[in-house]
Length: 390
Ligand SMILES: [Zn+2]
Image (cartoon, rainbow, N blue to C red):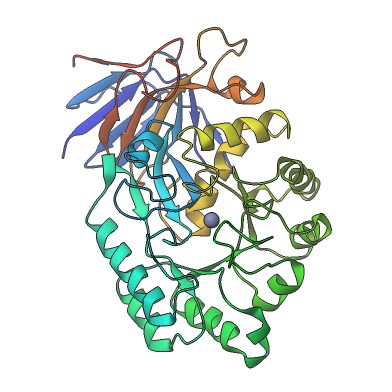
């Protein structure tokens, strides 16, 4: 493994809400891990990157993604989507279930659901397209699973299960509650598909009442994916629970704004996650997370350094993962970005505040340079970082 020194950073965003901005202009990376952050670091490294005064942020994490087989997505019959998302600054994807597998009976029976989760987890453990960390193997909860099944998924490192196809008329039998407690004692998080029916046509509708009964950790696409729950239900969840709430690109933008109003009033920024809920009927959106950050920062008037936390540190914390924070000892997943030529913004953060897309110059994942100079998916930033000798 090699070392990288990034110097001359203009603005450093941490991904941590307690301190979203840090006064520092250099980052030293060794063996894939952030070794030091400070001012004027000058250690020798295998690669020295002059950030040229642009902004460093933690790699973006898509909180709601639907990987299937490698970089192929059956949902849009397209290839290389994960590499394209990486060029949009995404360094990790959280699977909300591998339900696009061609021919998968929906809803799957318990044995099939378990098998898909195990196979997908194993495959992505062994495959990181363009370095992107794909947290897959999300078990779709259906009737008939046993506590042994939860032992099995925990033993291979699956960290997420999801209610989407579960028949909620069965709730009185207590099985769904048992699933939640079996997950929690094993450190597994529980997500729920909320709102109306999805493209599959067989997902179950869930709003305040179901959420209150199941008590999941994360409300998947609370503002719609694509159809949200009634606005009053969403506001009740925001006000009366501590659940994480996802805003996804596939959703209803009016409700996203309504949710942000509550988040600001209650100052619960730490509970908001940003995802795309793609690939799917919404398409393949390599710049999806950047666009969500720009929307919430500009139309929602949230400081962009806080919005970035919703697509980085918050997502890592919600899913029990050590990613999304730019600090010493953490994986070196870093994106360097700046305003795009012609934008009236001053820099990357001001771009988000004004609703403009920033341009990406570098993407580093686990200390490996994956994009250098400029991204293939954003217009080039006005200023780029570049490698300098010694
Ligand atoms: Zn989804």
